[in-house]
Length: 481
Image (cartoon, rainbow, N blue to C red; front, side):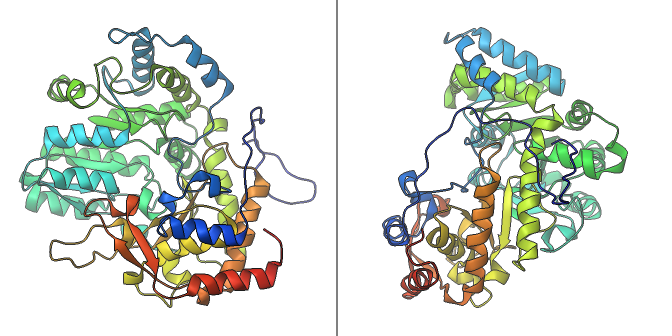
């Protein structure tokens, strides 16, 4: 966003785009919200959007496209094989990442499936800065396991460390010395999703690359949240201040052997893909694309979305396009800090992350405080956030809970979607909720899937706390929504 000073001294993000298409929103009253979340099994994933005011569940597939992306969709070549749309996208990916080979897939987790099936075998261990839910599920499905070697600062809630997504280099070196023969690849995630969208530095990534070269294992990058990470490297890493976004991108790509991404995040379209310069890796994965995704020139993607992605990737090279998300998040985080609300600092990418362990410090992790806070926030505001905590983990074989390192309520800010007044509304309702936080109770599962339970599991409150919260809302707000 432009470096503009306001005469009043107020510091707010100034959008460098204008709104040209709108979608009407509905704000249900508090009784309707209670009914909706009850019918949804107290899982915000199961809410119908007709009952949601501000959808802050995720930034995946819900970012606003530009006018140029919309226009490009009319150029799509919908041929099953040999589509010119595919070749335009491949050419753009080669231009940006410098990679010769591209395998399309319908989204990021499809890429994880292809990579895990190709490289992971029983007993393997994949070191990473931090896991993502579907990444871990695909690796464990193949008989492997993950080890998180996040830098110590990464799990500090309140911090001014600019790169809390960094890999712990000494720990990685030590792990490789001891168990390197069990490592099929090392994975880095740009913008560690589960700990607040925190970025890694270019210096750290290149140190990981050096260890990969030392032990002869590939470096795999999940680039789904690369846009945010690029911005943070540009503004927070001293050695990169004078590099362009395009130059930083190429440095990152040159360090990696495989790059995969979800276009639902990167490029503000839908789809995904894997790119590499290693022909052997390409040939190993190639047969799996027609088997699981589609032919090699569409891979389960809509060709219209592929055209939009081609433009979106180019727009990702524009700092004025990729800084809107991080700056909006920073503004929201600053306002919550002013209100005394525990939130992950510094602000990262993807969204604002509220520390449910401190917000609901009267609840145990077995009561799913992040999930309960997501429900409470919906009741208080109609805003749909997402639990990122113990509910998002998977039980051990003996049935015991894996307690998450963090319990976070994620309030995602999809790129170029919300207005500043809507962000202020979310802050206002969260502030009210914090003042009434003792009313929030726990949750327990009534229907618990074995895998990825947070997506479609159903829960119930452990007491009548929801009715008490609604009664307090009515007492304080009257007939207001």
